[in-house]
Image 1 (cartoon, rainbow, N blue to C red):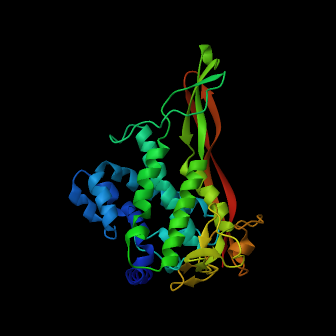
Image 2: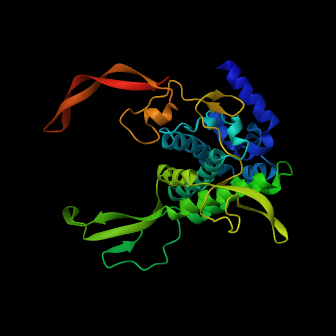
Image 3: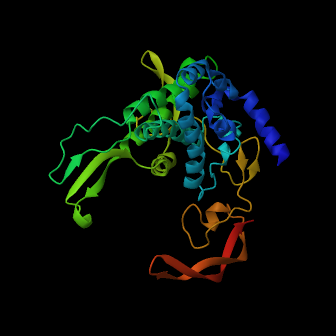
Length: 351
């Protein structure tokens, strides 16, 4: 494991021009231990481009939200892709990344999109919760209230979240002179897709008022769905991502679909430049950890099935004893007692 980590670290040093834009995900390592109340704290994370450092110095209060976004990006990605061969292991060692994120793959597309959405999501909610002095609740909805509800409460400030989030997430691609133009365009496009999915996740949330919970009156506001819901939508786009090439369209070079270059790239689709490994076998040069010893579902027909997860190599079965609460009873007033029950379950892991 130590040798693998060393290889990953050396690789990122040689190819940092591609992943520098998401080095901030490394805030999961030391970001929580920083007070973020002095400008020199901004230098604690290597890899931030000048514009990101400037944003940090001028808006120190935002950094706690960005640290939170880094943590949520990692958790949401790993949870959402836990049933696939690629289970978002590429960001485990952030700010050091596996090679698959440095080559413009569909995996890098979804990580960039999710990270971009997470920054704006975290800032928007921090505004509504009163954690940031520079912003407050989101503006009141323009649409008229219905007969059974009124606008009120404190909605997530998506406008401010998008403004500050895009400034932070897009800065490396807009200012850096390193890296290919195609890669920069790809990352900027996918960042925008992530933020659009976040915008689409805004929904009406309500709280009831009335005698004995009658809900005769409802107070409603606009709020964002959880980041896990955003990640689920991005997973669908990941599965349907479009491979693109960088070529002249008219007087300038643009990203166009490799197979159907007669149409422009849609604003709603994730794009990638390089095909991914199959992630079946361990390969440090490709950024694949392989699926050996990964748990699979014997009865599933989906991506977590033993056939797909194990790449046809077969699987081993073992039994595991689980102790859980059971036969719970409510006692007036007001506690619950439960017994402990033991059951045996069968697990399957890839060969």
